[in-house]
Amino acid sequence: MSDTTAARITSVHTVGVPVTDQDRALEFYVGTLGLDKLADAPVEQLGGRWIVVGPPGSGTTLALVPATPGVPAGVATGIRLGTDDAAALHAALADRGVEVGELLTWPGVPPMFAVKDPDGNGLSVTETR
Image (cartoon, rainbow, N blue to C red; front, side, top):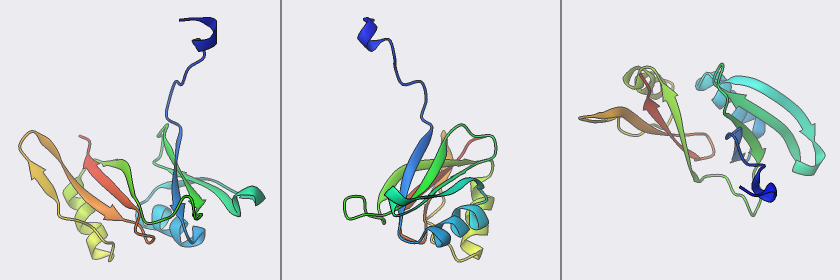
């Protein structure tokens, strides 16, 4: 490795999720999904706030950033969240009126399901135990 490439990426820290209403998104991600609010500060350049949420003890977090014309809300994020019990979380979220997809179970593959936040951003939840 040359001196110009010695510095490298060592982790995935924060993934941005574009939202149209940061307060509504914060309530969903913290109040409904159970993530912790780790930061919430006004940032004029964003046209809103820098809000960071994440699972307790996780090294990777989500930033609930204001949607813009170039970064719209309502996208398939590709984000996969982990849970100890996919079936129980699926049922709990459905009972709370959250838009969840079918609980998928295949031999040799952990149970998983799709979920949408209030802006229609698509996330996946996968059992991790």
